[in-house]
Each structure stands twice: as C-alpha cells, then as structure tokens.
Image 1: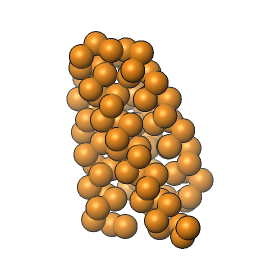
Image 2: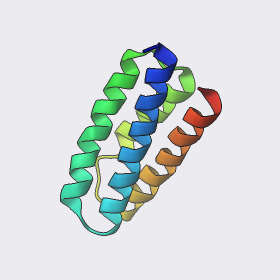
Image 3: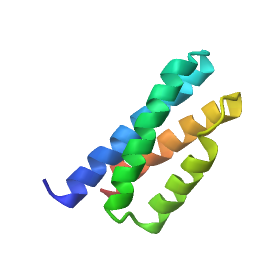
Length: 93
C-alpha cells in the first residue's frame, strides 16, 4: 500500500476515534471514551511515523494536549479535531 493511501486511512481512523471520544464523554460513558482515547493515541503515533506535514503536526500536538481531561470542553475539542482531520483527509489526500 502506498504512503498516501495508508496516511489517509490512518487520518480517517483517527477522526472516527476522536468522534467516539467526544460521544463517550458527552453521554458520560468514560470507559468508552478512554478506550477510544487510547486508539487515538495509537493512530497518532502511526501518523507521526509517516512524516506528516506541518498542519497535521500542529493538530496532533493540540490533540495530545487537550485529550487528557473528561470535561465537556474536551468533548467539544475532540469533535472539532475529528472534523479537521476528516476535512484534511478529504481535501488533501
């Protein structure tokens, strides 16, 4: 599989994991949110190994900073990042 296609799959998977984190936090299912948070960290590590561009690096850095809490703000940020990752995958790869 070429690098662009694998990068797109990883970014789309990361977006879905972040969306599930947001949904889990929003409805108070912290076990679910924590499970998908771990998945998001794994996807982020995979993406970092593929030498992402500066925009993706900034998103990944922000994701690592904000994803550690359980507040409603974290859920909103996770949903926003999910959308940003999805848009990047659709428009740039």
